[in-house]
Amino acid sequence: MLPEIQVLIKKLIAAGADFNICSLQLKLPFQLLLKYRPTDEATSRFVDQCVQQAGQALVIGRINDSKMRVVEIYKSPMQSPEESPVKVTEELLEICLHYNDQQSFVNYLTGFKITKHNVKKVIEVVLHTAVEKKMSECLRKIVDLGGALIFEEIRQTKQNTEVTLSVHRLELKGLLKKACLAADLSIVKILIANMKDLQLLNDDPLLALTLTNAYAIKRRSENREALLAVAVKQQPHNYGNVQTELTIIRQIAESNDLKRLLIHPIIYTFIMVKWIRLSPWMYLNFLLTFTTMLVFGLHSLDACSVDTSPSQPLWIGALLGTLYIVIREILQLVILRTAYATFENVMDLANIVGMIFVLLKGCHGPVDNHVHVQDGIAELP
Image 1 (cartoon, rainbow, N blue to C red):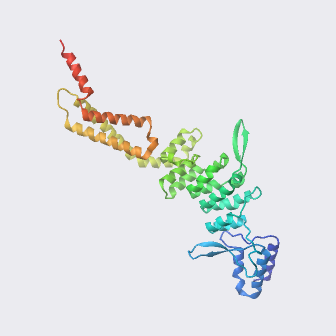
Image 2: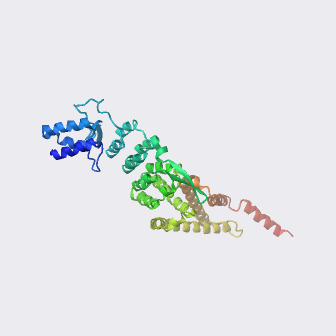
């Protein structure tokens, strides 16, 4: 190693430079230094001097037996563990996240404290990295440890309206956007449950981002629908209430604050795609329902006719139509569940009961008795 480089490294260490910081390419300074150790004796002595001057345990990365990259402490033959204690810093936790070493992260986090003095750095270095790496469990551990400080809020009154502001808005800015770009439901749920600052929630077009990524990535429908709920700023404490993607669109349409989003190109395209896919089924449903009502109406008139016997084809047609209506309502009940209980659906169920009664009783029920009474009255002298 060139003497000039050695002098520069010594000056950096003396000034407090930390070896336990990795680059974007996951390169560790000390690990790069170790590469030159076997070259000559002078370099080997220089590496030992660096270890002694560091004053803390130095980490290195390696591939374990499971072919996974993990973080380990370098065991120096020149020092005992007492002479080189593990100093848990934000950068060390960041290394674990970049290496996807969740076990080491959890172990080191137990000896780490989040305070008012380091909370901003924790957000910038650790929290953002955990979201970028999609490590939801590590994110949850960080929030459990220092969520009160990370998402600390103040309340101010503006124009007679009380608003919630995040103390660390500058550091948290862009965090929710990264979660939406990753389309990771568990991470989005953690963040949205703790963020109450509307400026953070509306800083980026989160609705468009979430819609785009929810469909760009293959995922289960309940996760996709939950992401859509988050996109319209709904609290995700009960995702069972979100029934379909069109339910979210209806919520946007019914909201005075969000209605303007319907003209957004992403939303407009989403609605048009849904309409193109569903319109054939809607037209078919309209045709079958109209045919059922027409045939059933003719059957009702024919069944109570006193001049002729009821037509068998009309009865069969009315029966098939009623069966279709029953199947349609069952499918709606399975899909909508508790949201099925609306006035329109209750009326449909009442119509089904009436149709079944007419098919089974024909003119031998109350309608028939009413007709015979009228006929009897008409024959009286």
